[in-house]
Length: 101
Image (cartoon, rainbow, N blue to C red):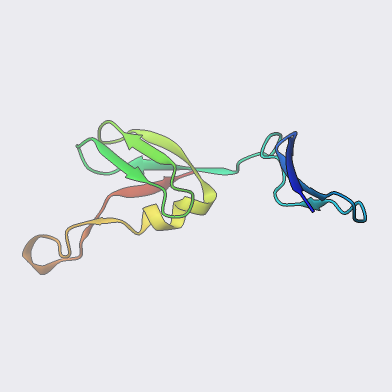
């Protein structure tokens, strides 16, 4: 028989006609969910625009010392970012960000 799909308050509901009334919830609404954030500070004097490695959200730092709140899911991936593979004179690479409490 015919299959119908309805949108109701951010949830996808599928109903089969002429069969038992079975409702399948495909996703939960995204409103009213709080996002836990961490503050990351830029360590280099440059404009940096990066996507969050987990959420894909765009984060922008305009200059050195600027602090941006990022989703906790993205924080570890962004803290691991470095400028180049090695630092000057064979030292360790320069970190782009530091965690601010």
